Image 1 (cartoon, rainbow over the protein chains, first blue to last red):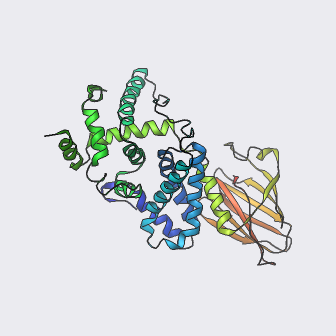
Image 2 (image 1 turned 135 degrees about the vertical axis):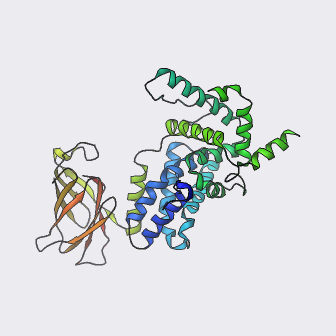
Image 3 (image 1 turned 120 degrees about the vertical axis):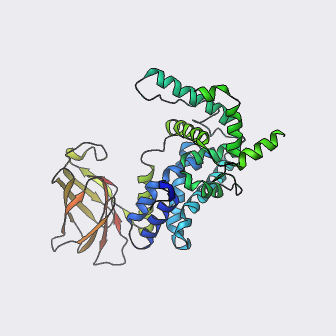
Length: 197
Length: 166
């Protein structure tokens, strides 16, 4: 159940749950939904969908899995299948409603981030770090933002599969940094605030 | 070296602690500003069950006051819920046994009926007795569904209840 290095791979978890489901344990599907819905949500949102559109897309992905479950020959491919289906559907919805105001609650501005922790100073430092990161992140090309938004929510062993499912070329991210993360790093290295925050 | 070369060189390096810090910061921003709707997974699961079973959805017709907050997080709930669908009506009573378990008993209006109780991590099955009654003596707390199949009419669609929080 665990990937090397002790970090749990979602791809592996998903594969086990999906195998269980296909072996006649309906609870397997429930585990699969619980473990991966968050990543699917952020995949849909990264394509610029509104919350309502993203919900529909994620639900349709799951319904589509029920219909196509027998067509997925290798359970290890189920995470990639879910991500790819979500991304394609989200892209189609986004294309249809482009130029409409769909970015209702995630725009170019720094989102409202509730501060946590009891120490006010700590909370301030924390939001400075977030504000700085967000500013450089929003300067990245659209495709890089889409990739990194989903990567940020994924676990490290899943980076390659996530990038692949998002239609990014091999080497986008994984054992190596890839160009998107390299661009972000260059920007952050050039910002003295990042080193000290 | 040009900036393009710098970028290529950086891109070919392994991910380091600073990259992970940047991703963790991005993650904290996204989780706080764009949380996953809390009931999205549950709704998806229900839609999938309905689709997979080609089931008819029963509606909750009444609940006793104790269960009025069916989806709330109150403790020590117990009570009675009635459901109805085109094919059948059902009534269930939930009694909490200990802190973590409940007893679920019920009654359906049809003839012999196969009852499936879908809990979070397991499924239990039983069949109604001659009087249409059924009991599950040990039910996990959490969201559950009942799937009812009429044994006297195998061609009929299964009936599924909405999620009930126990």
